[in-house]
Image (tube, one colour):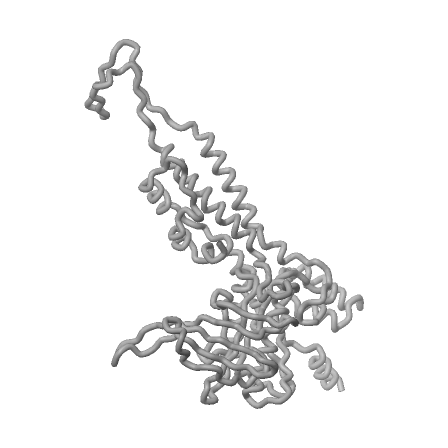
Length: 419
């Protein structure tokens, strides 16, 4: 259902009666006409994009004491195709909202080319195996490749890449989907000691033996399908109600009835001829039901931005009680942890023995930066009720200072200026 809603109107129409039931007595032609008039207003997509934009209102920053040049290189282009690290993470984050979990994978050319990272959607994972400690020991990934077709042509083919880990030894194989009996590449060694796939979960807890967390927007998906069905019903009844029905009584069965200003209808005594129209009561009730459902869907997702107190996240870094702490912030920190791991793999391929990359991602959403709020902070600082460090931290939370602003570096520079 999630994939269908994510695919939009065309996918739902292709699914037919699976998501738009056929009414008893409805002819195939009538159903097909109703199906082609039905469309999806995708509230799930709107909510996912809105929530996924929160951590990236400021670009991701990667800091390193010893390898800042390497960090800057991959922040600008992480996949070898010019995609920024922020762009890759934004795509991964939105996919995790849809599927519960998404993944960042790392690879390098066989001939020793530049290592790169790319987004791996859960939709492309065909299967996996975990050991007793829930560590990945096998994963099968579907991927597309463009190969030569004749002297001048090209064609797209489907392949399956398989990573396996046995102890500290990782190998990879590549199969053509059309002929899986003969692998293209078989059991080639991979330089890392772990399979290069880092998960980004939407939850701090993932069930043992599972690779995916529960999709956080699944209930909204159900509501969106209900809205698709009810809006189809509403559109259909409106179409019917707009056309009045001519009702005749006391008129001979073989009487010719013509409609128009130049015609007259002759009937027997007590004959009756009139248009019968829908009262509209059911239409109004249907419209109210749709409006109620739309209001619920529009507000859905706001709880993912609500503070819930300080927790220890999967990254091992606790948010202080005064900071924004919600499920989206937790997902952002999970993402930062995954990026740090992937950058560590990239550093290994670049012969960096001890990487020290630290990923800074925005976790402050909805913090007030109105003039009144800023004046209150400034007054508190002037009166000595707020320390300089806390004052600058509050400015940073509100986006008035860049997210890589260092309080320690600022204090050092101030001490030099006052010396």
